[in-house]
Amino acid sequence: MRLSVIGCGYVGLVTGACLAEAGHEVVCTDIDGERIAKLNAGGVPIYEHHLDQILASAHKAGKISYTADAGQAIRSGDAIFICVGTPPKDSGEADLSAIDNVARQIAAEAKSPKLVVEKSTVPARTGLELSRALAAYSKKSDVKFRVASNPEFLREGTAVADFFHPDRIVVGVEDPSSAAELREIYRPILERSFRCPVHNGTCPPGRKAEFLVTTINSAELIKHASNSFLALKISYANVIADLCEKIGANVEEVTHAMGLDARIGGQFLKAGLGYGGFCFPKDVQAFIHLSASVGVDFDILKATERVNKQRIDRFFEKIRQALWVVKGKRVAVLGLAFKANTDDIRFAPALEVVKRLLEEGAVVHATDPEGMPRTKALFPQVHYHEDAYQALQDADAALVCTEWDVFRKLDWDRAGKLMARKLVIDGRNLYMPQGMREKGFEYYSFGRD
Ligand code: UDX
Image (cartoon, rainbow, N blue to C red):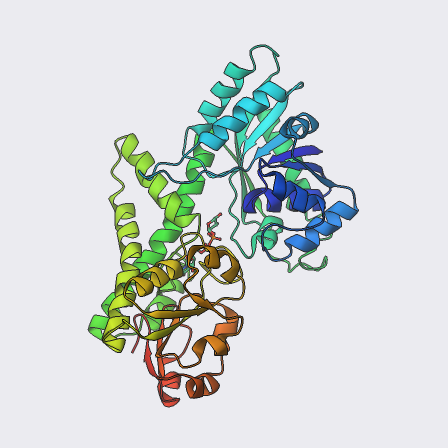
């Protein structure tokens, strides 16, 4: 099928690339002309595992193209995927102005009927507004639009694999024909009828994805409800960690046993510095805001958010307790990205840690396999190192902020010899406390002795 993707960020590029790889003809557009130029020159503007490979193969097969001319992109597709940003306003409410702009553009540019699919995370009832905007602004052309919601559940870092192996594909529609069209778009993925590039065509058997047809309002709610629930699980584990510290229990023993109960599940129970990224913090806020706007008090989510914000305070309590005076201390920050395997630093807990360290007068040395270029622009006063051992040289403390594998595998005997003081404060519970102490380190983590 011929598809258009509006917005070439994380969601748009992964969606466009994967749908092209699955055999569709995809035209991508973005208001950022430089981004389109880079894509046209064979570059990839973001780091996402496997994305470069898929874009290259789709490009070679002539299945994907990029244009800065939104009108051309809009006219070329039978279905248009809206993948533009919905950042939070100061109030926590989602800013839908980019969606509104795109809606008006589609209405103005389309010359034939279109299925307009919202993929960006949006509050419930956005689909209704989208329908209204499309109808209102297409008065002159008489083109008919159908609207659908098709939320993404992609994790950064594994987004390509997630796209090809989803647990569920949710489509919120107004009519059966939209559902049929979306089923056709996703047929190669539902039937696994193409060579999956992530596993070279030898995908692990796994469960087949469920294709769920719902109302548009339900589909929109499913996205927010899912992400908020995962955030809630993390905050829950973090409170258990605090409790473990007070009581003298081990959070990993507790959450491991909890997770073995199939009703609970073992994922997203990792205690530490808490969640960051461009999804959870804003989705939780937007969900609280949406609930309040319809008179439903979502108190549990307010607590989820509060607990998450307090993680940085808890980390700093540990830093202060260990270092006594922070001012003038040389501190190595290991990890800047909001999680491992991404260069995304948006709402990364590490950035808040860096900010507070600088405010308190620490000398900050930092390293991250992918997150440094973006962080440099925000914190030019930090000393950046490609190599973790260089960052640890003469450090009074190492602070682990992101769960990168390279940090998990660090040789602490070697690092210990380089550091001014053998002190590790681990915000991601990467190491065994006993093992670190045997190496002669003062070691602090979350919820374990
Ligand atoms: C999330 C959702 O998982 C995805 O389905 C949705 O479409 C987009 O938002 P992502 O933002 O890529 O994906 O990050 P995710 O892997 O879910 O992690 C979010 C944050 O929670 C990270 O900062 C991570 O370090 C933290 N986290 C995760 C924990 O602190 N503990 C855990 O147990 C799991």
